[in-house]
Length: 183
Image: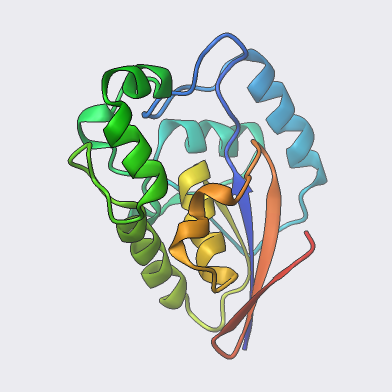
């Protein structure tokens, strides 16, 4: 059987906010961008999402009925949760650098990049073969982890994958072989 899974990266923060290691809410422009993107999406037989407020609001703005999937939860940022990347880099430059360069590093006491990739790989491998077309609204980190698996790329490529807000990519699995395809 063939599974075609379209990954949709949740919309970002508003223009005045700096990225947080947290589930920041959608505001103004992000919601209007999501509405425009939603009009362009084809229908899917199954739609799931990361169980975050940001992904729930993105799905709502897209007029999608989605089911939260606990396995798709965002990174466990540990003690960095709620802080900005700039704050973390200023107060823990060594830890921040290690986290961005070593896929096994956990300076925040949370989840490593490798652990996130393994969790998402497990979820992808557990998809039923008769799923057909599905949509997953995900946090950027979860989207990157899914792409690492789909591309059979080394975990070290995680931070090199750009996943802009509201971007989509489709991956297709043919009898346990996954490849990327144009969305």
